[in-house]
Length: 73
Image (cartoon, rainbow, N blue to C red):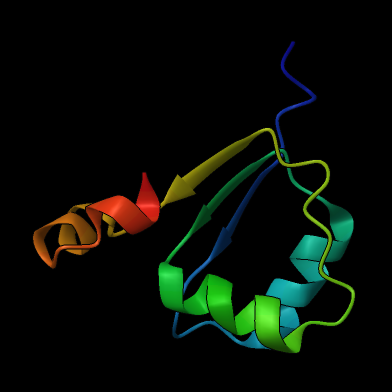
């Protein structure tokens, strides 16, 4: 019924190689911590997020507490 929903996640502590493989397969919903997402943006050459329809920024509540509201809104 919802075969178009393909979740993916990027979090610290995971092996970057495994995350790259997941990203290559594609995902429509991506959950990521800010640090790990930036790590992939800087170091993963073939990073394509064109199929992502929904993005969830994990730890956004902590970023708001730290004063980054303007940066993430």
